[in-house]
Amino acid sequence: MNAALPLRRLAVAVLALSVVGAAGSAYAADKKIALVQINQEALFFTQMDQGAQAAAKAAGVNLDIYNSNNDPSAQNNAIETYIQQKVDAILVVAIDVNGIKPAITEAKKAGIPVVTIDAIVNGDNSVQVGVDNKKVGVDIGKYTANYINRNLGGKAQIGVVGALNSFIQNVRLDGFKEGVASAPGAKIVSTVDGQNVQDQAQTAGENLISGNPNLQIVYATGEPALIGLVAAALSQGTTDHLKIVGWDLSAQAIKGIDAGFVTAVVQQDPEGEGKAAVGAALKLIAKQPVEKNISVPVTIVTKANVDKYRAIFK
Image 1: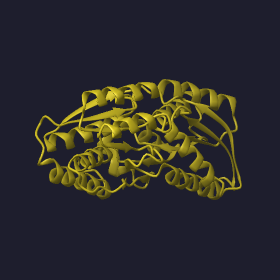
Image 2 (image 1 turned 90 degrees about the horizontal axis):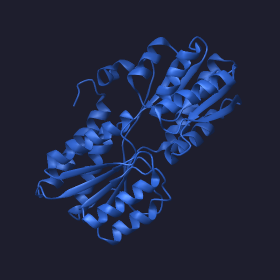
Image 3 (image 1 turned 180 degrees about the horizontal axis):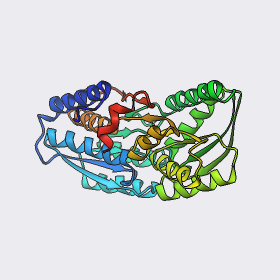
């Protein structure tokens, strides 16, 4: 674990590894856990994979990671395949939280425990690992509203670069709208779809900025959207007056914070989520009690506390 990690993140990682150690010691190397991932482009997901891989290695179990390439149908098909292979547990980062329910139900009927990560799949009684995306969306919305009230006279035109194919990011947008409403003069004037792909998010961001010259704030709902938006602001020459808030740090976002046009970024702990998910799966396999909701904390990163994260994104 990198020494630059904040203490809360380190605590989550240590807790996850202790869970893995306690539950995993009874397992032979022939045990297999499957992780059905959203994509392998976003650093958030690759860091989650790394955490899961570290936890699986520590426990002496096999981990297979499936890249769904942002395709909900591929996720369903992957779960069906893993059921046929009779894996010991399935971890899934759901794209479509409703569409994936039948596949999760089939896994449980086959006696395979399921752990959902990041996205909340309501009503399926799975163990859930991650953050409360709605609540944190409200928090970053309130942060933005306070900025608007303090620095922009309580009024602002806001744009959004989202991922309309992502349930999670739509929840983050709903939360942001609720939180930013505490600045009554703030108005979301346009929302564009980056489709959770960095290049498309940049193009969407450039179109958003050029089509709305009076924008003062733009909110990015995920890592590809934020990286694309930072590139769009630089290419459009708007970093002198346009402020950006969003989700998931990257080297590009940190440069934006240093330059002053990225104001606040929600930083999760994807590595901790991956470790905690494997630890929960091992307990489920062993028929041990597991909390239904395992919360992994987040931090809103600004210029005041960004130094803690620099080493992670070199």
